[in-house]
Image (cartoon, rainbow, N blue to C red; front, side, top):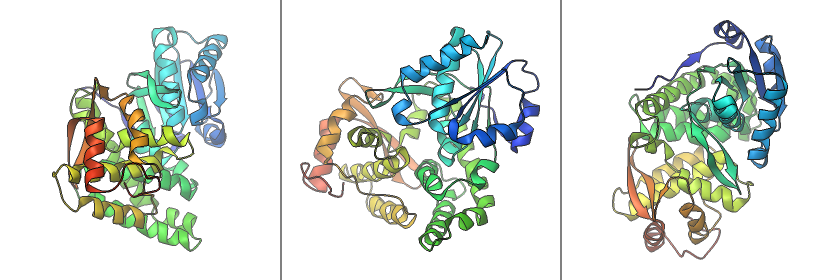
Length: 358
């Protein structure tokens, strides 16, 4: 069991937890400079980056490495990444390979990164729009889950992380968090439709914080038991094989959170196509749509096939598809992409029509 250290604390306490590290270097999304200031850390250097999917490449990775070298970071350095999932992916990868590995930690500032991207030690970059093809698995020393960044997070950013939050509770629904999360997100979405999104997010801040803590605990437990993704950890990829293919085909115009939402629906439909469950996709579609999440893949399923074959989860001619069987019940199935496409199209519709409900 690998220990994953998650610390739930206000921003002002992060400095205290890092008191034992002499040389701290901060790399942050340039949009969260105010949060970096609030940390109050006397860093040896602070490096803002453009945290976009287009910049999540080896080019940016090398820029970070060159900056660390220029600033004199040695093997005792501690690198702190502050930002969303793109930032934590880049910083974790950079620290893992700089001088063969220095210690690092994260202050994730988005819902998506707090419940998923910053937890579990997966760090990497994209190659030719294929998601996270180059990277390492190495755990941060600590991940700080701080409430303050979410207090001012725009509603669209909350929505972007909503699918990952729901995904976690589709995998593990021990305390009925799925229904609680859906109810919260539906209420926020309804308020958002009336122009009161920010007020709704503030109103549900405590509920959101509790759900984030529960989701982080689920992911940390799974990743700790299976750090190298040889078994149970594959379940965390629910919806992601489809999602990464959607992102690839969209040329990054579809966000990761939106793609995961569509991907989970596709996974549920595939499970039904294989006769493993019945009616689940309709329930998830209704729940996700009520939360304001997209449910329809805008591409023909055949156009996703090539990208799925090159997915990092592919094993020879097979891909490990994660299939939901119910709320709190998922399993993996090794399938050829062609067989998955055939099953989906046989039950749902033509593979060659775009803008259809897959």
